[in-house]
Image (cartoon, rainbow, N blue to C red):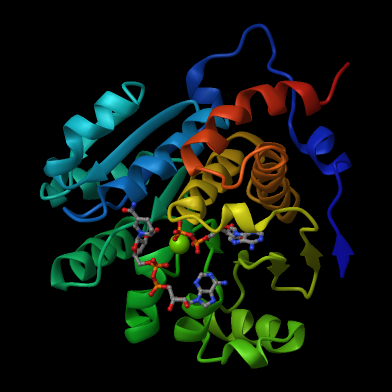
Length: 283
Ligand SMILES: NC(=O)C1=CN([C@@H]2O[C@H](COP(=O)(O)OP(=O)(O)OC[C@H]3O[C@@H](n4cnc5c(N)ncnc54)[C@H](O)[C@@H]3O)[C@@H](O)[C@H]2O)[C@@H](O)CC1
Ligand SMILES: Nc1ncnc2c1ncn2[C@@H]1O[C@H](COP(=O)(O)OP(=O)(O)O)[C@@H](O)[C@H]1O
Ligand SMILES: [Mg+2]
């Protein structure tokens, strides 16, 4: 097990070439936010946007459209009731991030089915929050065709999905469960806690030494899901990109916590462009 350090940021974050254009930095689709949890998908959008995603679309309840556009006019809105449009869009994306504030009702289940049935081997899929809980209840909802599958549970979500109790979530058990969940695939587990660990299916494990209790604020994980998806869209879907995203999220959190009692997820997102410029690989 290896501790992540700041070097990973300069290894992963690349300076942008002069002839860059937006589609080079990931077409990202976020799916989530029912009427009660619109904030979850909005915070994930802010995480993705502020960590450099090139083009962002958000499929959510229309109830959230005004709030989404007020906070993030850069993002495009899709009414998630239009499942035909959603089905058509998914295969055109680089990364799909699904689950933040999705909820657990029949409608949420149908959205997850639409994702499962339309994702191809060209898309990276990040699964968070409600999506993980729904798959825990019905493993048929788990997509099997994605280019890479990234699970981002906190410990209780991982318990529900893997059936491993929090007290039994050892490295060996976690790698075993990841391999049982996804066979012969490019899958990763980001097991969030005060010491988040990132696992691949080959038993590589990285541990994040940063982060603080000020980050125990609703929406902090939603924000991370957006950053992970954005990094995969820009820098590749691999253990290093995912770990750099986790590290950057906590680095920003620690910077705020130095002189603030709590860390608002939206404040954390606002710091990301500056930190990325500071740490990006030079020359
Ligand atoms: N502003 C918003 O709209 C927000 C919406 N949210 C959404 O609310 C839904 C439910 O997710 P929640 O995570 O709140 O609820 P969950 O019920 O999934 O998880 C919280 C439970 O897990 C336990 N737990 C154990 N270890 C934990 C750990 N390391 N970290 C966190 N919890 C741990 C807690 O004690 C608590 O009982 C999701 O769809 C989520 O995306 C949340 O993200 C919060 C913010
Ligand atoms: N005490 C803590 N120390 C370090 N990091 C924390 C702490 N509490 C929460 N975090 C981080 O905040 C995020 C919380 O994620 P999650 O529980 O999914 O939040 P939400 O669903 O409310 O967005 C994770 O990245 C976790 O590592
Ligand atoms: Mg969460």
